[in-house]
Length: 205
Image (cartoon, rainbow, N blue to C red; front, side, top):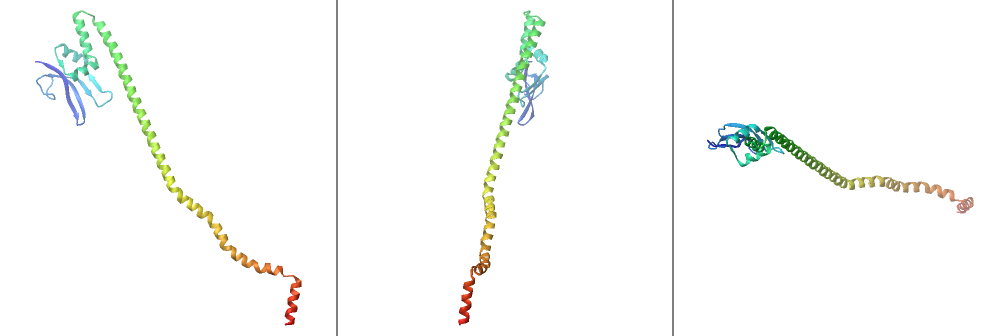
């Protein structure tokens, strides 16, 4: 019986979630399997992979063939490297201690790369969020400025009307003041001599 290590799809539409399984090559993709080795979630950035490395190595040592996608995932988690090191130990090229040291060193290096990628992703997200906030702020300021420009003519008209009112009142009241003051001014301007002449004229008549 030939065995394949492949992905079995789960999850909902638009958000797939995969199991990493060892299954009979003749079985359907989402059918029966021999052993579940891990999970693969491509919906996160970076993708989340949980894998039983030792279990995967056991199947590889027994002749299981991974599909292209499964092989990439196994390489990402170090299963292909560990399988290679186990083969070297079996042939006597290196000891188990040396193989374990090399594998642990690779794991540390890989963890550093993953952490660096996560930091870069977080930085890009924060920068994108900051740009979006600045753009929204600029749009709000433009709206406020437009509203002020639209309201300005009405305010100016009201101010002009308020300033013009006292002048109009003064112009309307001025004629009455002049008319009332006129007789007094005329009476003050008549001299005693002119008054005597007026009396003579009246008596002569």
